[in-house]
Amino acid sequence: MNKSTEPVLNPPLRIMYHGTSLPKCKKIMKSGYFKPWTYFSKDMADAIEMGGPVVFLVVFIKEDLPNYWQAFCQEKIPISRIVATEKITKEVLTTNCSLLNQIDESTKEDNLQNPGYAFYDNYSKYYDDENTRRN
Image (tube, rainbow, N blue to C red; front, side, top):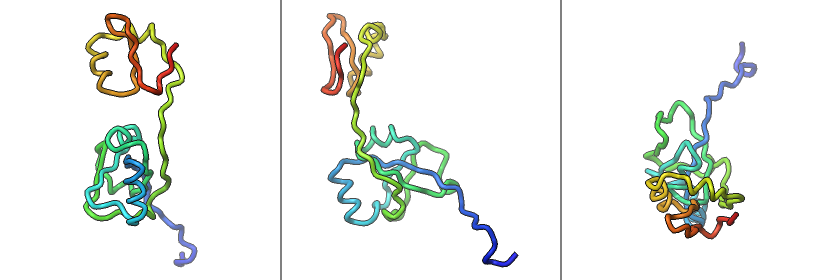
């Protein structure tokens, strides 16, 4: 088989996610690269939690990645490897308050640390964030 008819064998690629703020997103785009030691996650939710609501979807060669939930590179990553940039917004459409009221008290305390969770406390006062709709 000559070189012109050989099939192109591309390595398998994987999307990794990097969450940040809108100002930092603009800075990354202006610079043309991600700085060395920038972290990327295999899960978009982790990227949002760790970095912010503006998420870069960046392509990597799958075999170059560790088997962990996150990875970083020691060199600059050019923005040409960005598949997409998305701004994630959270809008809670429904909340089952009676079910939330049945959640174990220790779990409720954990939920206080994470915005977006809603529940009744022992005095039936309703806690919510600005995006939660009351039933």
